[in-house]
Image 1 (tube, rainbow, N blue to C red):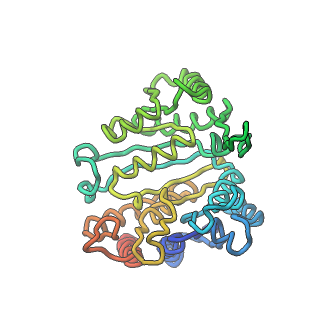
Image 2 (image 1 turned 120 degrees about the horizontal axis):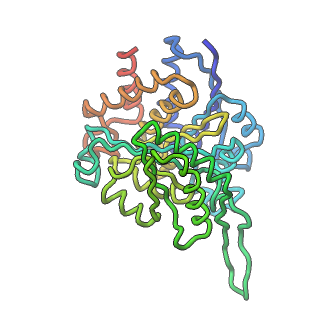
Image 3 (image 1 turned 120 degrees about the vertical axis):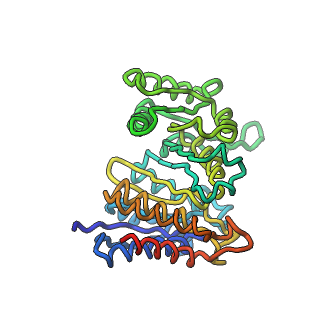
Length: 358
């Protein structure tokens, strides 16, 4: 069995708590000879600032590039909120995405049947929900230049540049096309083309790309309408294709359809590697209390086996284990404030179910 090397970034606040539960699964698969995975650790975000006065070291960027896959837990801490951009924890994550050329972000939005009653929407609106958000991840206003602060007529101004090239739009659209072919052959492309030139280029490029794919149903939707429609009628969507900024906001909004943001994983891919992380943040308000939901982290591990390590059977085992544990009524505090189990207990429950399948 070929050995795979992964790099783990525990990160900040709740990060070390949830990554511990994912490592339990990796260790079991290794012990069972189902995988041959070695893993190393590196610091990012506030954890790296604490040790090195930088949100990520150059050596760790290079180490990530040489790895077969990356697991990342959470980045961000209030301790450094007032730092300049290059010294903010989140800058380490942006630098990592750019260094690895992770231009594809995949965020699946799904609902476990046992949690239909936990969403803020009626169960008939979300039963059998299956959306995938394909988000461009290394362009847009997060990376556009120029950016900064300056004085204009004595008034301090902050400015950013929203920017996309045709080639950037083409490559993420091509990935969405391939995803749609394996699903319902439907793409909803998100923009704000009635206002933004950047969005006009996005829409024009998507249209040109889709000429050769008449079998796929393409719909354009303004981002404000999309935010409303995700809440009003989420099952109208299948593949959502979106720029970086809009995708960041819409995927977090869509996560609440499931009942908790602590349930959803994500994959960020280049042509060479993949990074896998929960879509939630570092949740400093509950860090260190042993109550955080580790399921998004464990399901991110499942995505790693599916997309990068070529072990889809292990991905299915993990997903089934999560489903069974939730069906048995075991919940963390985000889902049940009165009768809940701890972070580590949830990890143990998942591992018990995995062992029964292996």
